[in-house]
Image (cartoon, rainbow, N blue to C red; front, side, top):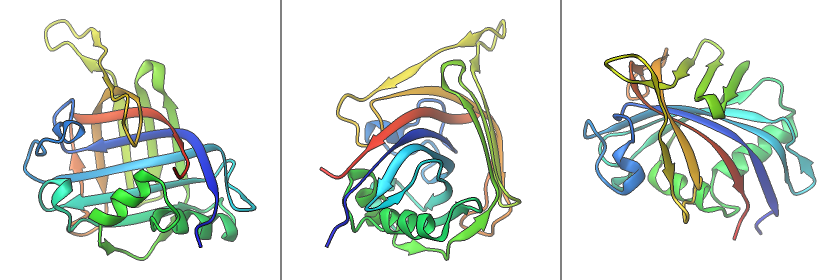
Length: 206
């Protein structure tokens, strides 16, 4: 029996694609495979009777090919500030068993699920300025800044507008200045000047 839920908040993701990320347009990833890291910070939400206000989790994901081809591996990192009930709710959502296109799709293409880790998650984002940083304990970190003109260094602003998007409708595109993880393959990560997205999310089962 699915549990009723709804969450909204801020998301920041860094991946190994070029700016724009072909995966956003049903194309193959820039390098033929996909690796990324992100944080989801809930400002308001619930899972059944469990409040998810202020809950936060991160994740590292790797696919050997295009996302839609599946066989991905995911490592979830739960914030140490979450209660046990919030952690159980987050894992239930991430399983995809309680609906929501984002969770159902990612569960379908990521059959290789690592045991969840718990760490202190630091997260800062200013979506309007395309600036963000996050750190998942000693597991992973990322720093995002605006894309800059290669000639004069001025900030360049670009957005992805997906009116029917299951993850977001509008995302600001940023530059992952650098990101890395301490995990082993296939979740090892070292990025420099690659795609980043900063967006709101507002999800509930259909």
